[in-house]
Length: 264
Ligand code: MG
Ligand code: MG
Image (cartoon, rainbow, N blue to C red; front, side, top):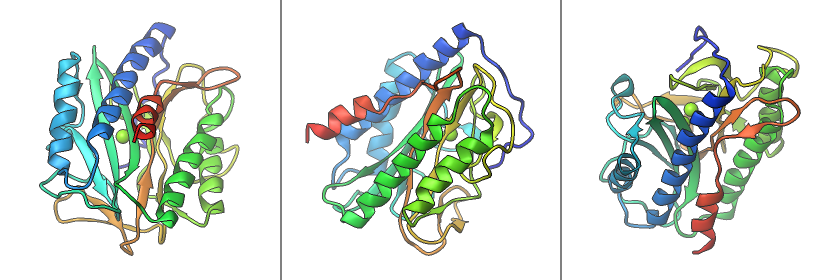
């Protein structure tokens, strides 16, 4: 999906705090999902766990019904890039699963994604995960007032391609607020110094989708599932971040997920 024409909304400090609450709930939901990721669990089971967790915290699943999407989570396994639909597929040792989650809390949206290994995963695939996450971290560093969107895009692309990977072009990051998708578009490729200037209290989702092989993708006949053109794996990590002066303000945290993963 492209969101080129969407409005950019500058938030008040109070609104950024409401967005922080929504995005922190997403962070906690992904950690709850992480607890249950293991060989044998179905992606539909993970979806049910996430929906129950979100509703029990007074929020709504943001993706369910969005443009007709049927579920709470997007669960994208192995060569699936994004927008995978939860199913009775049981995860297998050696899989990777990208879990994308959105909530609406008090009218404000949260949106974050994390790619998990399932059991023992081949080192070259773990390296893809590491580089994808590192490319996100590089992009986030550029989310400061006065920079341009292209500075984020360029930083993500440089890190990912530096690892020998390719950047998905057909899907991009986005602003977030009282809508799931606001302006500006945040591509994961681009030129330094190009694009929209970032103003204080613009809140954006940066979400590199990085492929082991070709950057090209295709969409399944279900109309949703995007997968790599060559069947090689793809990873996806996403943060919501408020643009500030001097340094970015992360509204998402992976700390809750890390706590779960390190306990294994
Ligand atoms: Mg997003
Ligand atoms: Mg997302």
